[in-house]
Image 1 (tube, rainbow, N blue to C red):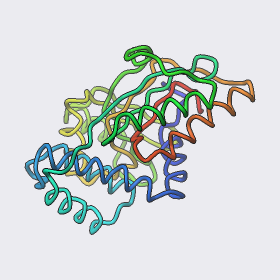
Image 2 (cartoon, rainbow, N blue to C red):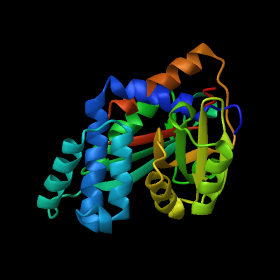
Image 3 (tube, rainbow, N blue to C red):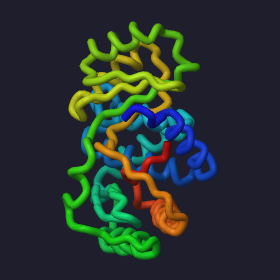
Image 4 (cartoon, helix red, strand yellow):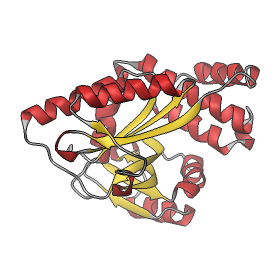
Length: 243
C-alpha cells in the first residue's frame, strides 16, 4: 500500500465534503439513529455510538448537532427503520466498486445505485463479485502536522492497544486494525489525545488499478458523482489508484 497517501485521500474527501456538509451530516445522522436503536443513547455503554460520534467530530459536526441527533434518535427508537445494504459491481475497465447504503426503502436505493452504474457504463454484479479484492479493516489516519508524538512511540502505543499494523506516509500515519478491535484501538488513541483525521471501518483494496483512458475516467467519475449525490449511500469503495 506504500505510495498511496491516505491523508491526501482523506483531505480530498474532506474538501469534497466541505462543499456538501448537509450530505455528510445526513449520512452520519442516519448512522447515529441506527447506533442508538441498536445500543441505546448513552455512548458510555454503546461502543458503536462512540465510533459514530468520533466520525462526526472528524467531519467537524458541531457537538450540539450530534447531541440533537442522539436525542432525536432516542425519541424515535420505535420508528427508525433504516437497514444496511451493500451492492457490488464493476466500472469501466473492470474497476471494482462497493457501495454501502443505509435505507428505509431498498427498492428505491437499488434503482438509484443501478442507475448510477449504468450511466457510467458499469454493471451491478452479485454479492461477493468484487469484495474478495478488498480487506475489511479499521483504519485510523493521523495528520503528521497535528501529532507531536514521536513516530516510534505512536507506533508502540497503537500496537499495544491492539492494532495490526502501523505505517508512515509523507504527511500522515496510518493505523490498521481488525474490524472487531477498531473501537478499542480508536478509544485508546483518543484517550491519549491523539488527533485523528479519519477513523472508520473501511474496505482497503488488495491491489490498485490505474485508469488512463479519458473516457473511462469520465464514466467512472459520473458513476461516483451520482452515488455521492444519493442520500442513501453511506460509502463507496473502489480499487482505483488515485495516487
